[in-house]
Length: 567
Ligand code: GLN
Image 1 (cartoon, protein in one colour):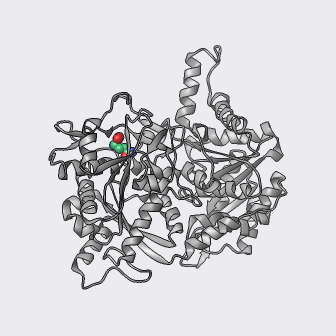
Image 2 (cartoon, rainbow, N blue to C red):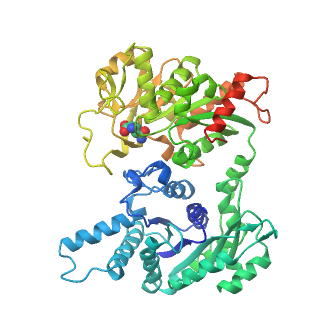
Image 3 (cartoon, rainbow, N blue to C red):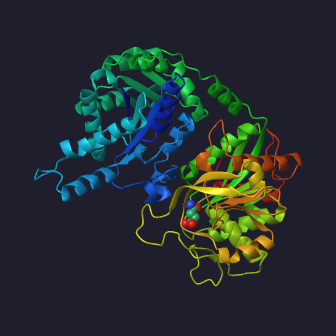
C-alpha cells in the first residue's frame, strides 16, 4: 500500500519547497523505495501553459505533452522519473471537473460544496496517482503558503487523507523560514510558530518541520521550535542556504531527516547517495569557467529558463567546468549591437519564446554566432531564428520571417505546416510532448546523439516551411533531424560551423544530472574548445574577463548589468 508524505509551506513563498520535495524523493529512492510525486497548485488556471513566464517562470513540458509547473522539472531531475499529467493538479482542473460533473447530473440533485465535492475530487486525484504508479511512497506538494485563501480546499483534502489512509500512512512535513534579525544577530522562530498554529487551525499537526535559514540552525533553536510546535527535536530540521540545490538531499540526509522519514515509513534499507554526492563534489570543483550568453525575452527572471540553466549545469559536469551565464535581453542587442553584448561569450543560446518582441535581436545574435564561428544552440524559437537569419543572409530573402512575427512577409520560412494544429482556442493547443525524430548520420546532431532515432519534447505552433527546405539545405543549412516520414524538420544545423544547431523541440527537459542532454553536452564542449584556442570569449578559471582597459568588454558588462544579470 502507498504511503503519503505531504509537504506544505509557511511564512513566505519561494522557500524551495519543490527542491525539498524533489530531495525527499531522491532520499527515499536511494533507500530502494519507488516514488510517485505530485504538485497541487491552488491557482485557477487549468495549467500554467497560458501564463506569462513573468508570472510563473518556465512552463515545464512532460513527455505526454502536459504543460506543468516548473517544480515537475525538479522532480524529474532529482528523482529521475518520467512524469505525466497526473502529477500536476490545479484548482482550475478540479473546479472545471466538479462543474462538468454537476452539468452531467452526476450529483443527483445535491448541493455542490467545497467540502465534500471539491475535496473529494482532490483526494480522487491523489488516489489515482497512487493507483496508477503503484509507488511505495507518494510525495505530495501543496503549492502556495499556509494562510492563502485558495489553498484551503487542498489543505482540507490532505487533512482528510490522514483519516482515509490511516494515521501512520500519512506524514506531514512543513517548510518554514527562520528570518535573521541583524540588530540582535539572531534567527527568529516566531513566524514558524505562527505558521504551525495556522496549520493546526486547519487541523494538520506537522510531523516534521524543515526550517530554511541563511545561517546554522543550532540545537537550542530546534528545541525551542520542538517545544512550541509539538514536534520531536529530531524532526525539527535546519536547512541552511546551500551553494547548489543539488546538495539539498545530502544536507537533509546529514541532518537526520532521511532516517526520521524512513523510520516513519517503515523503510529499513540504508541510503546510497554516493553517486549523487560524487556529482555534487564535481559540481563544486570546476577546473575552468565558460561563459555562455542566453539571449531571450524574459532574462530578468531566470526562472523562465530554469531547465536550460540546469541542462547547462549537467553538461558542465562532463567538461569539468563551471558555466557563467550572461543574461542578454534580446532587445539590448537591437539597441547596442551584438558585439557590445556578446563579445565575452564562448557560446550563445537562444531559448524558447512566444511573440515578436526581441526577435530581431535574436536574429542578430544568430548572425554573430554564424559569422564568427561561435557555438550556438537554438531551442525551439532559437532554431526558428537561426533559419530566419540564414534565409536572409545566405539566400538573400531580406524579408524572411516567421508567420508568427510578420504575417505580411512574402517569405515565411517558418510557418504552419499542413497537419499541424490550427490556431484556435488558447491553452493546450500547441504541438506538445514527445514526437519522434530521425537523425541524419554524420551530422553534428547525429554524432552527438550517437543514435538513429530519438523522441523529444515539443511546445510550439510553427515549423520550418518545407517550401524552403531544399534551398536552405543546398545552401548549407542542413536538416540533421526530421520526423520519421520526413514531413517536418526537427533539427537544423549550419554545415562547416563548429557547432550551430537548432532543435524544434526542447532538449533541456530531457537533461538529467547523470545524463546530460547530448546537444547541451556537445554545445558546451564546443564552447570549451574556443577556450582552448584562447579566443577572447573564453577565460581560464580565476581570470576576470573585465579587463578594465578593454572598452568594449566594459561596455558589455555595463549593458549586461543593466539587463539585471549575473552568473
Ligand atoms: N513561438 C514559436 C512557436 O510557437 C516558438 C515556441 C517556443 O519556442 N517554445 O512555434
